[in-house]
Image 1 (tube, rainbow, N blue to C red):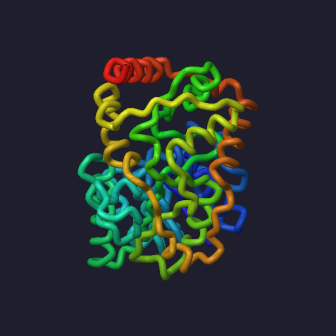
Image 2: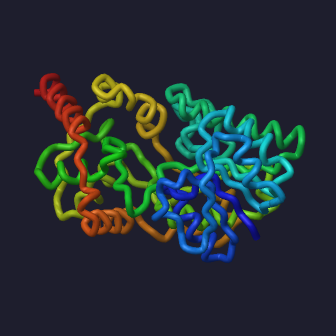
Image 3: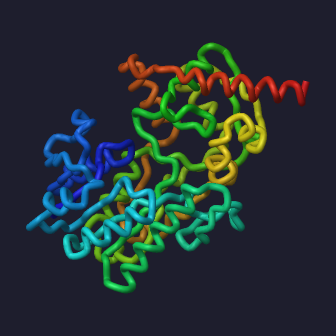
Length: 333
């Protein structure tokens, strides 16, 4: 079985690439050549400008893949281009969408694949909805063999995930904890969320690869473990041996100081994220998430400890957190 990944060296796709190879897939990666060290052994790497239609056509000329996965399709025009480039070149095209496409606010705390796609607060989620709509239209009209996968917050050894952390410099949150500084938790800390380790996500994803029953369908792939944001913060603190000092602020307050957080919080993490995984488990019976968040974040901390060059600090983020806390003190002395 042959697969082509557009991307394949990112946080989520790296784990999928490794498992696909382990299970015997012949894997080709289209990359920019920047993360050569992240290409798993056994994969064919083609350095291709994926924005150059002629270069992509030349690279796949005379080849057919059982599966093509585009890990970096964020806009509908990119999906339209994929439909034109890959129709007839694969037996299954997997579009990476996002659980951010689900409606916010939610009308039910339990999210299924049939939950409405109508995120009022986040353009990213609306773009993913339009990507899906275009791909499914191609399926209905021409038989384009699309399967949609919707990840939620998925992390791995190189990430320490938190709603109010620095995504590019994740050690910043941990360092605040170690320094005895307060961290910010949105809301009252009791809303529920799901963290999924990338090695668990990979089990569900690879199970869908090459599965004809999955064509024309959408699946989210998430853990069944549900935690409050306070519990998530405490688990991160436990991983480094400290008890975090938490300041709770509304998502609206936070967005005043970090405008870009409005979509991520109001359009995603400030609501409960509880996912019904019945659909993926029916098709992939061996999809079982075995890495708890407590275990996963300890692995992440160990990775950062082994790679101290990654312990970078986001000073702009630090200043924003300090400003949010100071403003909260003025309103709640």
